Length: 137
Image (tube, rainbow, N blue to C red; front, side, top):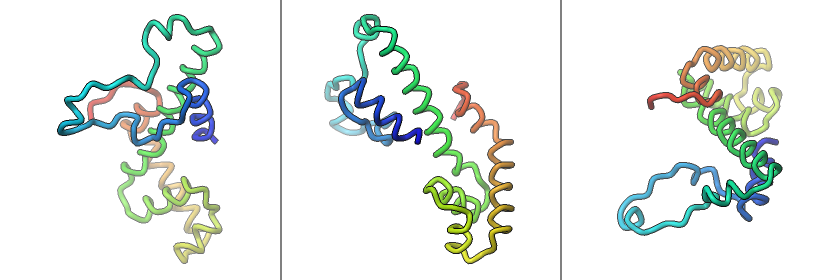
């Protein structure tokens, strides 16, 4: 749901949807030396926007930060099975579908999901990403 809202806001604000890979990608080689136009709005344009557009930009930035944090949370899990279950959850699979996919019981899926929640909940890096705090990477 949040990804669709991000795409909708990007179309309203920028006239097109920007893929998540391009949110903070560095360029190398000759591309790094070439002048680039900004996909965002300039400071002058931001000042001239009406209140509704300013709120849309703020909401878009908040949603992008949350989606990035949620999608990168799988990197902080310590077991491969947890990463697989987390990826399945992000894909929208139900616990029954995950159980069939991994050939385990639904109770086992529930235990793995609670392990995922516990690990993500205690991870300070994820918490900082989710709440927009600065962290050294």
